[in-house]
Image (cartoon, rainbow, N blue to C red):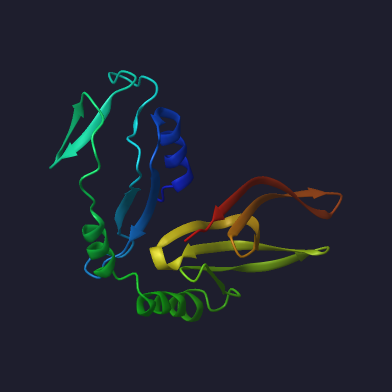
Length: 206
């Protein structure tokens, strides 16, 4: 399953558009979809000013403005007034999704009590919306605890944030983000040492 980072999409939009709109991406699961399949919902939030290209990109010259008409995107010669919002459509998609408390609880129970019951499973709720479960085999080295055979999932969106049967990681979090640091074990004079090779931070906002 693919997970798109909102910040990367927003940075791309900001780089090419004057008066860029705010972009939000989320995975929306539905009951009749196969497991690990979701609908990707991109929300472009409205604003008062018209967005236009501040630099050229491929065949689109600087200054161009586009409008969506039905299933087509067409250029316009002058600024247009915002006259359509798909708020009702978005609300309908979200209301018919299975991203509800019952499905989330079922996912947490399955992760904790069945799939990883022997691997010290844990969970954390962020912003009252996002639930992360993780499990791994703990190994203490000096004053730090490392995890191996790690599985980390964003349960309410069916996203596997990390999975490895070999890598060693540490996990830290606060109220706004969840951080994974990957390590390579180094054997030197019979001492267990670990070298960090990658840090991944997952921020959460409403």
